Length: 236
Ligand SMILES: Nc1ncnc2c1ncn2[C@@H]1O[C@H](COP(=O)(O)OP(=O)(O)OP(=O)(O)O)[C@@H](O)[C@H]1O
Ligand SMILES: [Mg+2]
Image (cartoon, rainbow, N blue to C red; front, side, top):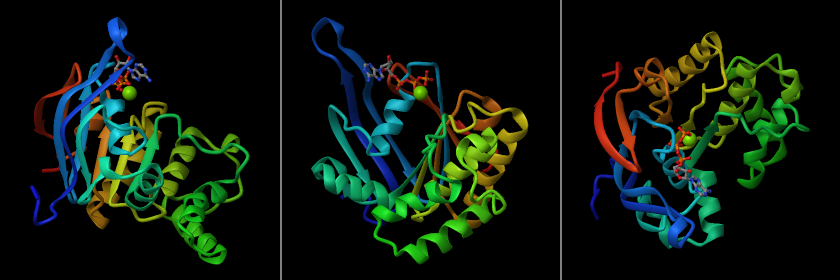
């Protein structure tokens, strides 16, 4: 085993991902190897189309690589069937997207409680933990608002509370501030900083903005489906 001490939360080795076939084959990831250590805060940058979201979707067990291996908290992901993969995702991962991906017909509290339904948590515990999670992101007074009754920054904080509700080992965020103005961007990034600093949360965040990436400890750059360079962020 490459990581006997268990210091790596995520480990991608020689990942290749292609879409389509024949003349129209698109190589989205081309021999990508990278890892994220427990407790690390890493930012991913790179031009549009360089494979960032493809990598995040594979890391998030939302998609499978064409070839290569992925270990998530010690588990070889490629050996799992779809049900096992869904369990692993629910247990190990939180995911935040640019467009929030909240269910519009559910309240903030119901959105946050949803992942616990799949995790088999009792209704009373779901509500108690949901309340606590929303208070934690500063939305204790917006429990019963639906997404269209919340600002963009508030919706992203609901999405973050939902991502954290099952106490994941890895938080993945694909352009989480891409749809937010600078003030709400700062609010959301402050929450990421707190999670990292106070709870030791492992965070992998994709962004196009240098000042967002600079909040991380390490910045990796993608180009044409490969990791081409690494540097330090500000939190080192
Ligand atoms: N479902 C798909 N079918 C076909 N091609 C795809 C699919 N998803 C992504 N691609 C292609 O794979 C490449 C990588 O896309 P990806 O979405 O990972 O880029 P990205 O770095 O996230 O870009 P952006 O910064 O614009 O979000 C692109 O060339 C894209 O067109
Ligand atoms: Mg993308």
